Length: 492
Ligand SMILES: Cc1ncc(COP(=O)(O)O)c(C=O)c1O
Picture 1 (spheres, protein in one colour):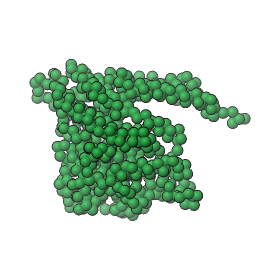
Picture 2 (cartoon, rainbow, N blue to C red):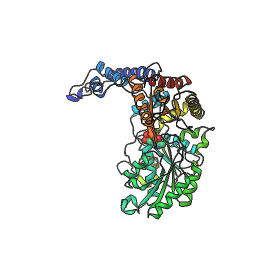
Picture 3 (cartoon, protein in one colour):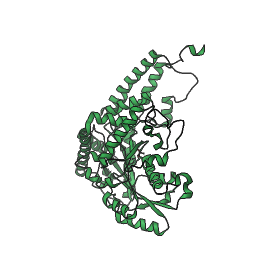
Picture 4 (spheres, rainbow, N blue to C red):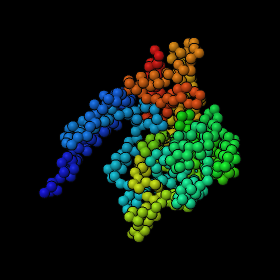
């Protein structure tokens, strides 16, 4: 009796399902895509958490709701969410909304499959390998391995685990008991995921030896050499160096060739965290910033950042051709990876990773690439550099703006010094300046006019980091950003 009729709501009712989805798609296109990327709309609609909870009516109840009410809820979710595709969103290392990547995300979500076997993801298994091999070719490798991971932090952690396994394969079975005290090296500007990874893998954050960076934020190879010797003298065994191509705050590129020499001399695994800067490899003009990357053992590259492929799209690329990923992480679950399947079981790539189910992340980059071509993507990278240059020149020209340093990349870092602070520098100047960026951030978010990140950094007090990544940006948006800071900060 009970199962002779479809379940209530849209479940099992094709007419209701179609009506719901068509309406939701139309809300998505109108509200999230068109309004969400329009400069004449707000980038965010700030509400205090208690008010937002009320507005969203978050409580989950016993009774289901009618379609009209559900559609209103979809609108509210979009209304109160931050529009990261908006041309005034400069807050993160990703921005913009690529329609092809979005279309592919919708397809991916609709198909709702897992990347682990050819059996249930034939298209995506083949496509992932094609996309990874394209990225590897840009790194400079004609062969190798890789996998899409849930974010750059996880890609970095995989690199640490692989380097450790490569040196001490017995640790897979015997764990930390099989290991001497290990040491890995990264600069003071590296992403925090390196320390998190060391903690997560049981190495401990103390195993991360922090290498000095120069005034531009680049790792100092001489200090790397010094730290390696120091670690050895203290009885630790160095096994990996993580260099960064495009540091998170300053956008610096570590000198890979010099670092690679040090790694080679000491027999160390070289990982390059190019989560942010990897996409520069697409640009003939700027790819020299990553010279030397081809000798790395592993590379993290997030197309979801500069290329705007959509969260998440992060590749871990390996030079290895010995099936290291599978050997390190595989556990041959017989219910999933049967060896007597009717097709080539090498296509079941799920044992390369520590996850079981894995989201499909290759498709959004693939269609975007098909649409733009490598040349279109190169143009985006070059245009971002040009706009960052324009912002830099404007910052230099305007009174009240003080550059932190000449940027090498798309992170343009500066202080806004309001007129009240600029006239006479008080003994408390630094403390007062430190309060400017948080105060301006509050104003811009509450007005919804734009979003820019800020941070203290080493001895420097809070400054803005504007990230020029959105391919839809124009000079007018850059002018707006500076005008708006002046407007919001005039009376501070
Ligand atoms: C240099 C660098 N590496 C790694 C990451 C982490 O990437 P994800 O946010 O995808 O975990 C970031 C994030 O900003 C980064 O800047």
